[in-house]
Image (tube, rainbow, N blue to C red; front, side):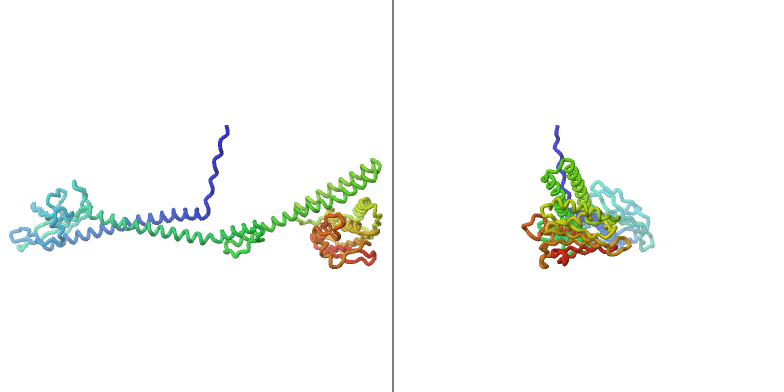
Length: 461
């Protein structure tokens, strides 16, 4: 039973990730800030209430007198009108060791059984749970002297319900929450703006890459911030590498087709001449072997990105003879005579495939344009630490190349005469190989044969 594969969730964008991370961090920060401020405000309000109740107690102590008979008299004037208003939540009580008890008008009907006398000089401040709710109670123990120097111990108690205190705390919390929420929204909007501004270079890189894909640009030109320079440089290098690779593969296919042309022409020529079976078989097998070597060489060129390691020397004479024999079969109708001027023991300081491509394309080009004669000259030009210098000269007695067309015929895909069959890439292959060996290719007029002269100079290395 087939089951539908779960849809792959799309990854979050950098802006979304940054916004979420910032949102969580901001929420945590504001939450902790609010909690700390709440605790600080709670302690501040509690301390303020302690001081306020303490001041009320001092006011009652100051206004209380002891008569000669030892009677306690409480002033009629209250420190706050709330002490005279029933149910105001602010209460005052005075108790003595001898059973004296006084309470403000606001305390009528309330139960204060929890009050205990304190020794003179002692104070206490604590919350107390009662049947009517929580009270914050401040108690102060004093000893008042009468005119007869008689001491009367009293405990002054001032209490306040938590409703008034909690109302102040709740008001602060609401105000604090409102301001923190507004601040959080403002910071989030600011953060989104900063994120958009900060990620603008990345969006510019993305836009520039889209232009490159459409072909309207070649590279990431910038300017970009310093942090993106490494990225853009590597992207440009990657783009250049991809283009170079694509060009190299295209050129390699063209070079392969061009290189296989001669062996195929030889095979076709042999088939058309109706040679005996054994000779035909040997010639075809020989050309198949050459085609196999050409394919392997071209694949090697494509894989090594045009870099060649010069590790051996390849004798030239044998390859030159095989090459000329093959071309004489292809161009048998022209009856071209190819002459050699090869220095004894001269060798090519590189790969065999490079030698065959270099010499093959030059000589075949000469056969194609020659009337009757081709001259191949190869000589050494000096010995270096790594390889010998070498000079190839191929001349023909054909029509030659005009000076104003020399640069044009060296371009890939351009033929000297559009009426002549060919791919127009043989000389460009020669140019590529010469460049790989840091050599030079010169095209001019042959003084000896009257046609074109191609001169390749490979410096010693």
